[in-house]
Image (cartoon, rainbow, N blue to C red; front, side, top):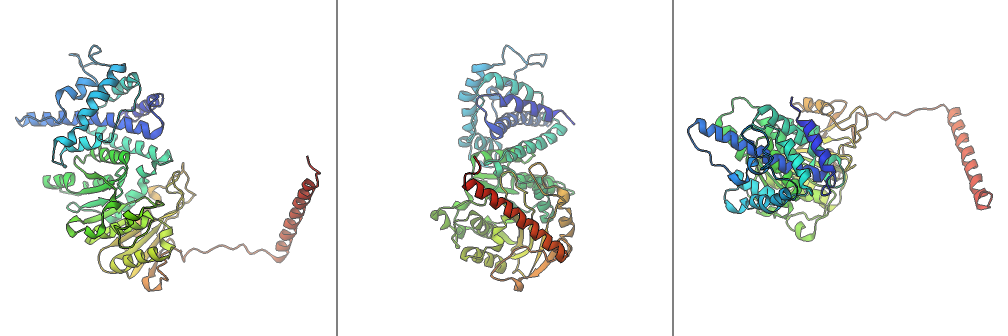
Length: 490
């Protein structure tokens, strides 16, 4: 294990002191673009070495004047930082703001190949700016990141996990950061049971920092006997998604690339602006996995893109995902619990379509506190397939041994029984099956019939004693209130 995490921790401490940085979102964003450029530099050098061994010449994406070794940390013949060439202070800030960023932003307009690395770089930097106010602070950060070697497989592997920690820190920061992070334990369980295979396409229409797609990639690349063609398919033709928020989009694309997916098909777009009536079979996907935003309200022009109009964001996303699923495809979507029990017209119609046109075979009730601190809303995961109608729904209730809090998050071990029972959908203390004919008014609420409410049966004399005690206390409080009203207390 390298000392990558301590170095990143040191960088965050340095950035917190900078006047241009405010909170976890800012310092994660700024660490991201610097890490990305160092990673890209090492990746290109590695490609150049491979080409040399094959007696070929590698065509660098970044030109010589803007490569890491030219501006960030130029080296002398001894391999150490050349202080005479390493700019700092205002000179460094001016170069980054007026030369480097405009150069990188221009990439998207220079190529018509959306799958190319050059296009992805342009798409990333289109929504980024340098917020580090002090060139001296930036110099400190560059010098630390320059010590990282992303040509080293172990260090590159660790980088992907360190980056996940940074994104988790943004989520834990609260405020509007929740879009960046779904708990890893929940993501891992969802991906494991969906079990995506190489050759299938995976879609997340609310991609955020691409946690679901990254986990799907990690899962799929473990499959045995993958050919060169399979690996190329994973790189270019497997992962698809949209993200509306600029910063989340940037983080998501970087997250995919840093995990090894060079050309993810992630687009900066509001998924709900697409009229779902226009979606055709060629647009659909084998596997859909997502945690769409909930609690939002959409305007009437957005609602018109859906057959069942509603201002609740979550209802619109469910309709979108239903339409985007291939025949025979499977989906897992996190939803607020309110969707299950609300039975007004729009909610009932969406659930009716889901039950009649899809096989809604599983509903997982997640415990309260899964998305703390940025949301206390109780949530569920719905699993459905575009394969016939629903006949039975298997419910599973996740029951951690203790209440979840910001500092005591959900763990994968809390989801393990669910994963174990998944192949057979067996009934247990935490799971049960409901026939669709037993549902009333499309109420899908998860009510565990195996949970017995313990009632403490007190003796009659004990009940009378408790009543007398409470009556006496009420009398004392009433007397105090009367004295206050009469001016007995100052």
